[in-house]
Length: 414
Image 1: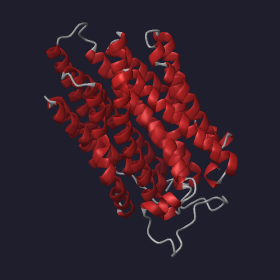
Image 2 (image 1 turned 45 degrees about the vertical axis):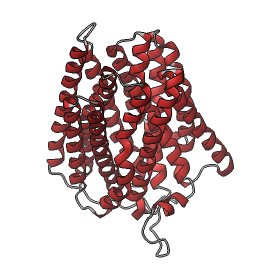
Image 3 (image 1 turned 90 degrees about the horizontal axis):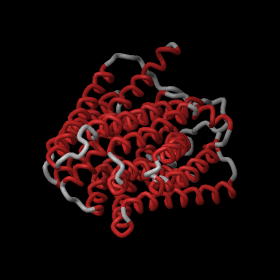
Image 4 (image 1 turned 30 degrees about the horizontal axis):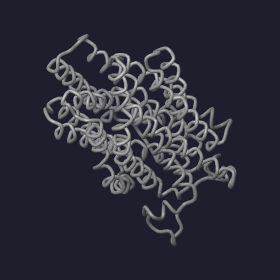
């Protein structure tokens, strides 16, 4: 297989990620606006936001094991895209809080299924030296969708200067239908024929992943979590994903409270995503210069500091935009880096299961943290939810710093 042919699968996955995530990120902020229109409290909004991750918590491990057995991961990716489309359609039709929650659960499951398929493909078809680039490019596609989706959604919701409840609900439905369209047009990309083959580990590297010994047997959640460093990588990933989700769900509420319209909120979320795209495109160069743990620590610390300042300065839009630009760059680093660090810590045959365990941790966080953030937002306002998640980022950074000071660079860093 030639070099150009060997990369076709990656570019198809990046394009799929971009289109499907545009659809998803058109829909997700609409959940908050629809709930506001339905007179939901901040706690209920946090509860419904957590519903997005409830089903994936129980499904991730099984899906990871399924991915290890599947020869055609395209099928898993297509199924995920179809579920995202179905969830956005349900959101467009939803007329009550329960249906909104069900819609979130459906496209949350779709996001999980497509993510496991895509991440398993990167770990299966990339050499070890290309893992950062593979995860970086696919997550850059995700960030591109996170950029375009809120921009389009904010533009549609900004068409009426002072909308009535009926007009707002109509605009939300239109935005959700557009999201469903993006998710649907992503599906044919996985029908394009292209050749792929499993890539062996880079045996020239001393830290190349070993195969599982007979004593280790099949991967289980407990065995994976016992590997040194895996819980730490999962904590960093969970904290970073949580801040992205909380921003998507609660920044619109902060904007409503401060008198900042949906268009500007969409622009701020898009700036964060654009900056994350840039950092993810540069991730291979950055990881060649610094250890991955060092980059993750910088990501957690600087992401927490900049994002925490946004609610305080949101009425000063140029300043808020600069903060989101800086924060977005660092927020974009942790996810792809912790993917590589996790799979380089476990035997090669455990990679899909390890990624699924990591995603399970993320989804547990997506259930628990919005509930906790919603509870914090009740007395402190929606900004309290964002500050609460920034504290989690800082705590994860402290854990990484303590661990790094004890162990120094490990095999997962190089």
